[in-house]
Image 1 (cartoon, one colour):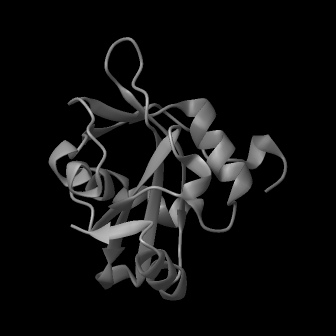
Image 2: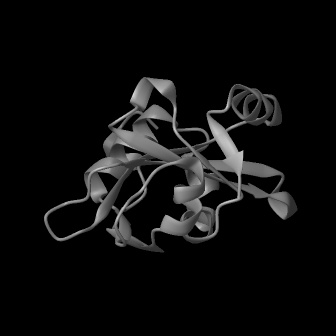
Length: 133
């Protein structure tokens, strides 16, 4: 699907309210706000993860509002954080990457989403990059 004409039609997504209390457990003290996924950022995620992006979409809101894990990659300290949800019925672990600084309207922007495997989840937990909620 390298031809954008073959891509799905994207629309802006409002995914729900940021779970600030769960992020506080990780040491991130953020203000309340809603999380959205813009059309350009969805296209970026789709381009980066064409084989797996669509499998994450049905679980985005649940991953944002009720993550099973939260954390931050050392590569993105000060820039972003990660919300992760194990979706057992789908055999999927969904990661949603969010910018740490909200817009002027107090909205947090998703930058990408993709599935991770159980080994990657375990590795990030072991290293302290993610914690269970």
